[in-house]
Image 1 (cartoon, rainbow, N blue to C red):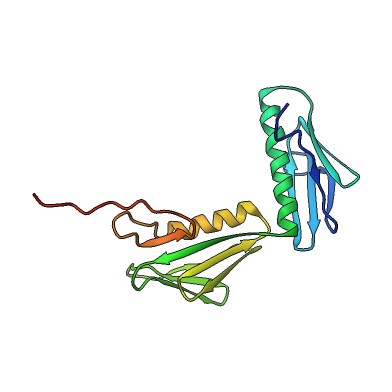
Image 2: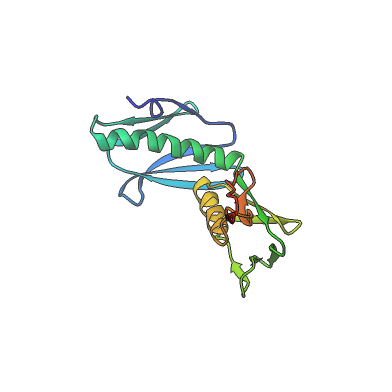
Length: 184
């Protein structure tokens, strides 16, 4: 049995978890509703979700390799959905470099990163981007996957380079620095 999959998920007050037929794989769909919003996830055949007495249990039909892998996956996804609708997720990024900055223009984020042009990025619905003092960016939302994707996309505009450390990095990221070439 999967070590992660067999763990029960406690549903906090104010959160409802419903399982219904349908979804992307035409089997079952789990919907989690809380104070911050609603998230849904489609289940594949072979994995079952039961909600009783504010506890969510994830089980599998048999021990095929595919069902074993989906067992732990769906348990983690449902736990992340419950945490997302109650607390939410956030990632912080830092811009390092002289003249590198970001600013909000309406719902778009405009980056000046040393290129000949400015980069405009509009985050998807459900994700908010906050900018403090032009170099600190906070990406937040209820979907862990979407917040991570947006943060990775922003970081990809100018990844930190190893010689001077300029670029966009996660606030807790350590950039390995290289020494410059020495002449003999």
